[in-house]
Length: 193
Image (cartoon, rainbow, N blue to C red; front, side, top):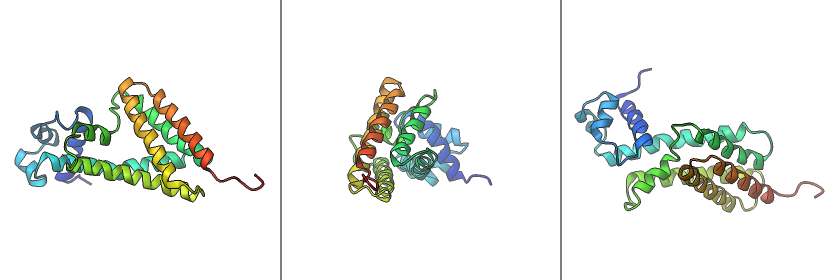
């Protein structure tokens, strides 16, 4: 099925914004990459702000679904599976086109505009990822699931920053080891413990 014009615009913006950053990409460049006129672009998106938010909103569910697949696809219990997310992120970080977390990078670009629609989209995504982790940990019987989910998210976001800064995926792996240890300690003791 052919993508709609709106979908083509978002796909083009996603490629450009992720590779170069929202601030460096003009609406002319997005229109050209999408194969549409600027008039058509502005018909679908009132502003670059709206397009930047749509770019991140479009990454939200696919990113969480990817984390879920990585978690489920890792052998072991919740601690090992949590580490599995980080190991997969480290593998992704070794790709030459990897540019870190699009949500964090966009938020950093727009740090002086906390009410920006793209910043709000980033915050919503991070909260959804945290809520998913919380549900996983609660399902494993961890009493402090909300606090643990937040700690793992802090490790992940810190690892995104350090990995991007140093261009060294071992930071992501180290964060995964720390997350695994946190989850392991938080798990309820088994029978006879």
